[in-house]
Image (cartoon, rainbow, N blue to C red):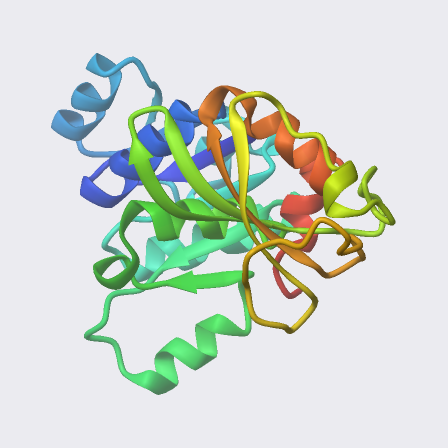
Length: 230
C-alpha cells in the first residue's frame, strides 16, 4: 500500500519506519529542514513543504495514495491536509494532542476517518489507523515478527472453510479465533470461518500480505478506504 505522512517528527517518522518494515511505500512531507534531512538520511522519500497545501500533497503522490496520515503537532495543518486528502479519495488519519478540549475532538472526529492520540497509541496505533479496519496490529514480537488480528470479509477466499482446512504460509501461525462479536479463544478444528469472524495470527512481515489476501481477500486500496467511517 502507498501512504503519505505529513510530519517527520517523532510520531511521523516512527510510523513511517513501521510501515516501511512491512513493505509499504511511504512518502513524508516536512517543512522543517533538519527533520526533512533526518528522514532523507534514513532512506525515505521526503517532500519539503507545508502539508496543508494541495500542491505539496500532490507532489508527494496523494493522487495514488491509499491513506494520508496528518501527524504533525499543528492541528490546523493536520485538518487541512485531511480535507484535501479526502477530496482525493484517501483514507484520512488526523493527530490530535490530548490537551485539546473534548468538544474540539468530537468536532474534528466527524470530518475525518480516524482521530488518534499519539501519546496513547504510539506508532503502532497510527499504523493501525492508516491500514484500516480489516487488519489490526496487536504486538511487535521481534524485528520481523508481528501479531495481527484479521477480520474475515465476504471476499475472503477461505470463507466457509473450517479451521482444519485453513492453510497459512509456513511463517504464519494461528493463535486465536473468535466468532463475530464473540470472545477470542483457542481455535477448534471444526469451527467454520464466516464473515465477521476474527483470527489472531503470528506472522513474519514477509508473509503478512499473503496472510491478508487469504483471510481478508479484498483489494488493499478498498480495504483502506472503507475501513473508516465516512
